[in-house]
Image 1 (cartoon, rainbow, N blue to C red):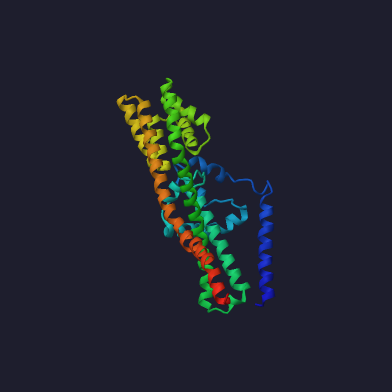
Image 2: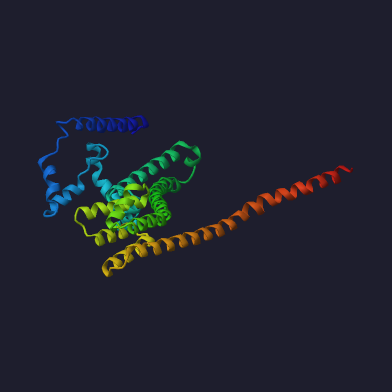
Length: 312
């Protein structure tokens, strides 16, 4: 097969898939079948319904999703086996504030890997420098690019989770002090949580708003707080939840508990700042020793050397 025929086959396939995708968006053709409408309502009693919903996809287009669903499913299972189980991904997704499911994140990883594979293959084909390399290296470069794409998506999720936890840690003392003031004014713990979540806009306040919503739908306060603690897995919040639930069980005044927690959080923040300052102090020696000091010596010695060489 010549190059022209290969490009013609590729363009024809792409055109056909595109036309079928456009046709599937017509309301009459894209109307869900009876099995698709009933399956979500019998997931708890039917294993076939769960398998049917799990393999049904409409992203990004119905036809493309249906055609490549088996391939995407295999790739997602491979990523789950290589990069870790679903518990770590679920924890990072909740810590980052994302509403995506683990399956959706694995799908994004597959897309990133395919994009990396396509970019790597395009670079190998387009640049003459890579075409002169051995065939084994030419094959490995797109594979390495695909693995880099998947790992980059996982790294971005971890970075987002870490950044959001850092914001929660910085908001923690202020939120506790606000709750202490509300409790000291005579409000209950639920009212204090509702006031904090209503009047502030931080990440921790959003999580507390979820706790208030759960309690108002019938979930016990202790259960909602422990769910929050497991979801974000922040040590300060975990200690707070343990002490608050213990105080509720024993009848201890919550204002004093929260005040001591706020003071501990302030002290921990100060220790963190001192540690960061110590690390930055060491890092600042690098430009001082390798940039500023050599330039100072150069400016001090160069005029004398110039005069000595010129003979004046």
